[in-house]
Length: 276
Image (cartoon, rainbow, N blue to C red):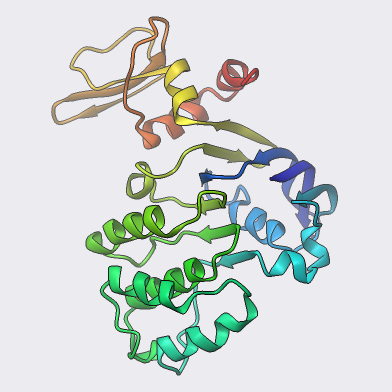
């Protein structure tokens, strides 16, 4: 488990995160959402120990990330949005770099590369941006770490690549791992992320499972506007709208509509989910 308690961090005199508290549990793929500048990338770098909190604490299975203890480092991997085009064949690079992670599996790397239709004999600095990103995602999964932090992993991927990414994540991650995916591409990932965390600079606006969200909110894809709608958007065939689920009906979450609802009604959403 990862426990974040009253975490604050600033860049000089400019606050980035203030008094953030959050628990991340094993066996889940968290979608970390938020507007530009709220600190999603900063939070990931704090979780992996590249930055130290100004105040508050982070504890990952008993380790303090910023101490960068070997027991912590060998079981976590942070993949930034921008990745380096190394002058080396990807298979050779992965085999030698993987020695830093005791559970690294070159067979899993090759399996992920195959699912991505990537050539492990190709030099990384000769790859397209999408191929390079797929290589790094394949390596991250092959490290077999418990804590996997991915910052905008689908940026640079084409439509088939995004489909492949979902397949790779669902088929090659361990059941006890904690995966945190920071993304703006919510439609690319809404079928795999659960729970959903929506971050604000001074608060965690939402940290809830899909089932809890649909217990509280109803996502209506009809043609008639509901006067109780908290958010609505016109579609070619009608509307997508979100309103309180007072009848206990089932619906399919639209993560984009959820995000807009949360930001339009921050206080109300906090109250609705405060006891979960």
